Amino acid sequence: MLPPTNTPRFPRGWSAETACRLEATAPKPGNVHPAAEFPDLRYDELVAAGRAIGPAIELACERPLGETILEAVTASRAVTRSNANLGIVLAIAPLAAVRDGEEAAAGIDRVLGSLTDDDGKNVWRAITIAKPGGLGTAASHDLAGPPPRDLLAAMREAAGRDGIARLWATGYRELFDEVVPDLEREHASRGRIDDAIILTYLRLLSRRPDTLVARKHGDAEARSVSEMAARVLEGDEAGLANRIEAFDRTLRSRRCNPGTSADFIAAALYILIREGRL
Image 1: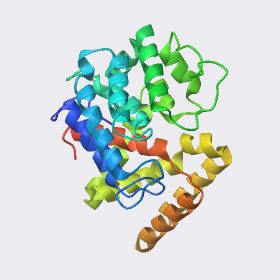
Image 2: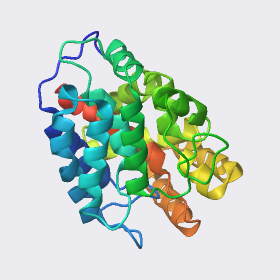
Image 3: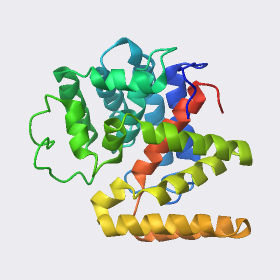
């Protein structure tokens, strides 16, 4: 669990930039990192995108959430060929809008409970600018239609098919109660941040199918990926590195990128970095 109050030690923008860089650098199976890229996305673009969102995130507590998200996504898309970090922006921006000294969960509830029509318009515009893959269409609140009057209601409706929407809909409890403690515990145990990130990512993926994989490849494939992640964690420590490498090869051969799980890791890193807990 998070401490009872948000007690920051480092600036919001710097913390976001650093979280993005650490998340991108760790060689997580199926993701871009310094030794692996996608046709439309490289590691240096992820780092550039992370640096680009810093100024907007730094001011998140001083203006409406939708403005922060729109500015961050616009800056990110200016330095990349494709969507590099929309999910990360959507995950971190509400955290950055929590006031210093405010209880974290209550702060998130306040931020997400005070959204306006303009926030909905700006977030819808940001998503359109980012052009994320695999969204498909929806019966209501479709991106091809008008922005929602109630953005949080739209996120609640999308929670079953999008992990970041689920995060908003549930007040970030999954992040606070599971991902952050996992990451902090793994880092304390292993000492290396890359190892901690990879293992936390695998634990998250084993618990819940990645919604980006589900949207692009179907629910059955997403469940299969989660089952494979669980098997990686179940084996002995001596063979862990080999199992991780094999899992990575399988994901890449299937063109499966558990990108939403990676976004959760970036958000958890942001919390731990900002509070000086890494």
